[in-house]
Length: 290
Image (tube, rainbow, N blue to C red):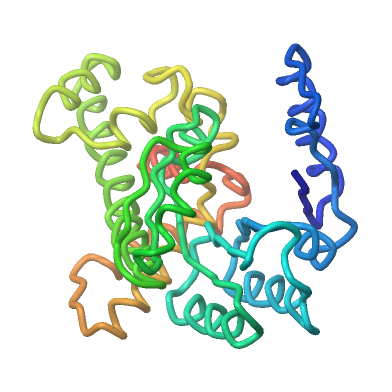
């Protein structure tokens, strides 16, 4: 396996983690070995399947361009190279990148954004939303299942991203609603853990209440229980919200709740004390606003 990250320290840390994890296994063919590529182009030249996971649309477009131009040679051991982009970006950019890859040769580009957050990534329980032609599914699915528990084909290229943006629009709302509901119950004198248990046994149950509960101490592994560190950053949630709003505008889909939701995340982002925090820090913001 080859990896590349603009942050060299992150790449080195990943290599060390893999070495530690698989140190007890014998691997005569070096199948567990991880090397750091010198550049994205070098990685592409020596790979049959390439994953990209980047923060923004412009990053994906730039990275793929640097890999395929000029004249990327044939893959080492396959008829065609498969680019699998797991980033959450706008579908129109993804389709443009896919077109550029196809124009450059026989290689293909599919979108496979993921859901499950940092918790799901660490546990290997991510869900992938795949946008790809039917004939590519059996090539892509096995490698995605090495990192997750489910792969859902949503349609042709770009459809995975449309599904992810619909999901994350709902997530942005649920995060605020869960924080408000927990705050309401606690202010009324309820124990936080008791309230969470009741919600998770009732119709209000959702991922934010059960897995990523925003109240410190309710879920041991949640970011809220470690000072809101790690997890899914507020900045990334806001980015996905904006992508979803833009997609809705392009599709002519009416959104009634987007404006106040956007304002809440903007207000949280303006607070330097929340910089780098998981998006469940909205709960702390509500407390401090009281």
